[in-house]
Amino acid sequence: MTSSETATASRPFPEVPGRAKGYDRAAVDTFLRRAREAFEGADDELDSVAIRRTAFPLVRGGYAVAPVDAAVGRIEDAFAARERELALSRAGARAWVGRSRNLAQEILDRLSRPERERFDRVGVLSYGYRVDEVDLVTDRISRYLESGEALTVEQVRSVAFRMQRGGYREAQVDAVLDGVVSVILAIG
Image (cartoon, rainbow, N blue to C red; front, top):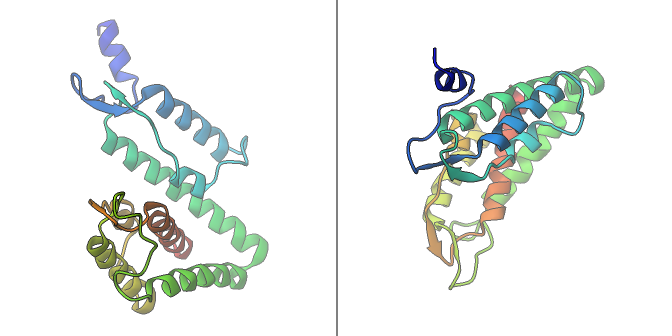
């Protein structure tokens, strides 16, 4: 095996070809190291929410995005499961279910607003998420919360909206999606 083959074999993810952009390798490697340490108990500051909000800079020749995103999702799932077990052992099932129910109700209250009015809008000259696309996704989330229609964490994580002038404010939509992921992971 040549030295370049050895270096490639030791990388945790494939790299994007040529001049394409991928996630910065050093940032991803640092995150993986920190996540491992946190999971083993050396870092109490990293939790499933912080992992969900992790972002990596895009650079030429970085790691391929999809495999990294999938790995981060699995890491988040592991942290969430551990957090659920810890909370259940400390506060009991009733408190854990109550907290999850309260978050689900907050989300449902937001999503019960009339279509096209569920989130604040950006100005007419600014770009936000497409209102019709967000409303379709939030309708599905509402059905999940109200009647238990099937919805997975991966489906929520993989949602992507196109942009439009005067669209929904991204931060608000993203916060609701984060909350939905938390609810799904809390249920287990």
